[in-house]
Image 1 (cartoon, rainbow, N blue to C red):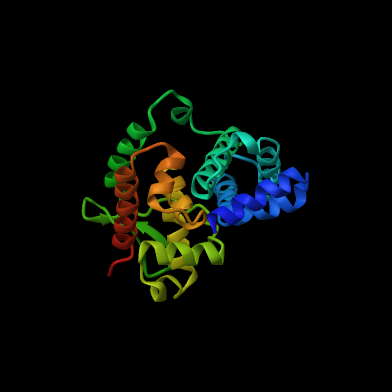
Image 2 (image 1 turned 90 degrees about the vertical axis):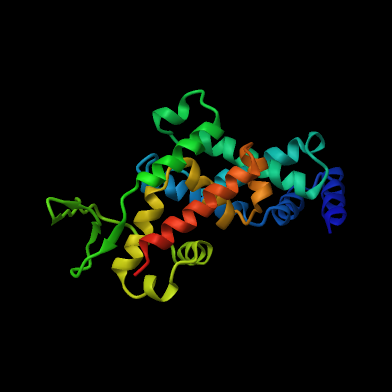
Length: 240
């Protein structure tokens, strides 16, 4: 299959058939479109970019056309090409999305991820009270603390299903009512930036742990650790 797709791309490039080339290229990375869409939606949800300013299809089309123009200089192996596609997508998205100040600093990604592991240890447990409101499970002078209640936008149904499956939380419980679905969306939004990107690559991008590590330029063991921690944290928040 690898040789067939790469050979097809070479033939289409030689024939200057950009349209067919782009269609074949999407078969190399079938999760790329959804990944780009999710990164942009996540940025919109967090107020980093104005809603609707960037269309996922436009970002993807620009990327695929750039690949077409520079195909000869790219890896001629399907797996390596898929990784490179996601790397280029991340580079493009990082220039679009206005990142937090700490993300703009020249800090090693490995150090950022290590810090995010510590941050997740400090994230308070949340639950849904009798009124269906999201509250922190903390005690202060033996009183329940209820945080401010910003409006929470639910995740798209398909992405919500992927998060449920990936994290292993109780599907029936999450789907029981809007409050539980809002809690899931809130937990996703609260994930540290780089950890959320890893989760997006795993779910929407449909990449393996090894491919994610190559895309982000970090150790596969660290990726596995972050994803495992995310699973554990989501399950903890939804446990009885």
